[in-house]
Image 1 (tube, helix red, strand yellow):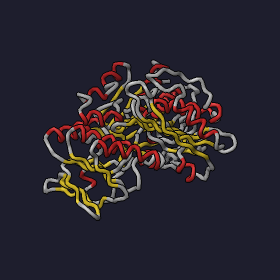
Image 2 (spheres, rainbow, N blue to C red):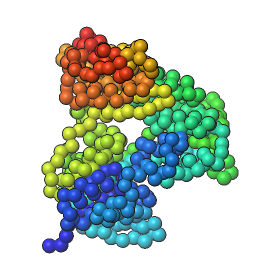
Image 3 (cartoon, one colour):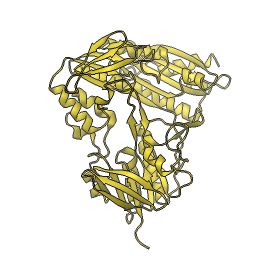
Image 4 (cartoon, rainbow, N blue to C red):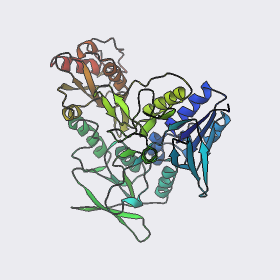
Length: 448
């Protein structure tokens, strides 16, 4: 019997985590990874900071290059796109950048194709490259360095807000246009208001409840404006960030099952049901939401790395389990740090879950200590039991990582009454004697 061969489709977080885990467990295993771009294991989350100029050199976004992985015994093939999967024959069709195609056999397979930016249907959108890869970020930064006075960001989610701030850091006049009535839809409206205030305080013009009708291009296909029903905004640079969707067409064509979330259905071992030795991980795969108790597709590098590692372990005979997600995320938006975990009040309403909620405002440090700033904490809990179902935090320095305490509480099903008495640390540079989380827990505990 010959050497077993594990093939990986996709060379970013999930794919290379799977490859590395499998290689560590079985040094004799042949591991080959196909990546259609030039880079592996890069931080898409760092792109706005690179565009802003806070990070010098795109190579700083790459945690492990293709050469690094090759040195560890992984056969990484960049600029090679898998265009077909034959599960019956255990074979991939791979197209190189030159157009030449080859057939590549596999014994086990990990699909880690990630996600792709949603392309809006209005004219001109196809001319705007999504700033989602290192190469795209390099091209956007080069364009910024060539000049321009104005920028428009379409979409006011995490990426849109972070890119708007990056453009402000570059000295541009920035407009952000969002079709929804609030920024950052992952927050409840009352918490999102603080984020909008921070963006506007930096000089970003925020236009809500407005649909873009066209990105106006010049004769060379470069953007010069963004048109809505009411106004045309000058734009030397445009970023479109209206969301992303799991990249599953290749896997679907091969016969892998797509779940209700639009991502690949997997079990808690990252296995694709009905196909032995086939796994999926990362942004293209579903996860089980521990609060909503249903499959979801939440695209975060934290999940992708964990799922990829588990897929690699299990592809080599292991028995690791991915326990699910609760959507914990943080971001820095201008003056404020923002965190969220579990479900929001509006997500609970959409799911038909009855909740109580409370929001408090406090200080990030003892009020007399230099640098103290505002912090808002909102908690969502189950009536009766008081079980914490979600939390949101917006505040100045020191606010965001408090979300990890709430994430732990939500993960473990801790009641608000217990969180209110949790033994948290205290010193004036970090909080008042009652941390804002304890105050918020006490407030919501009164309502259960």
